[in-house]
Image 1 (cartoon, rainbow, N blue to C red):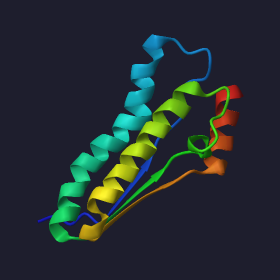
Image 2 (image 1 turned 180 degrees about the horizontal axis):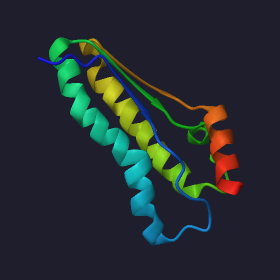
Image 3 (image 1 turned 135 degrees about the vertical axis):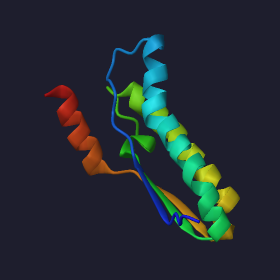
Image 4 (image 1 turned 180 degrees about the vertical axis):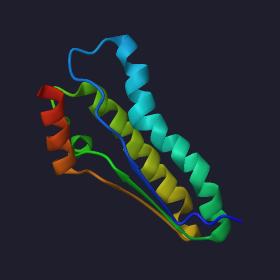
Length: 115
């Protein structure tokens, strides 16, 4: 049996304003569904061994949305909600789940978007 102890997820900013309705599926796939898929793959093994860590580095935009990054703001809020739900449902079984809203990652991503 393979042991899964830690899952670290980090999603990238996809696009800035103006956003069209057809831009959302790709943004949600990159910034939300990638976290969901990784957790669905890793968490069962963590539950079986009653130990593991899930950490997702998101963005400070979860607490204070960044005006020009509507796609990222939307998807990361969803990822944070998913992780909070996962934490409340399973952390009593020895797994720990958390998200970190990184200001540095946000600033670096904004620089890459606009440079």
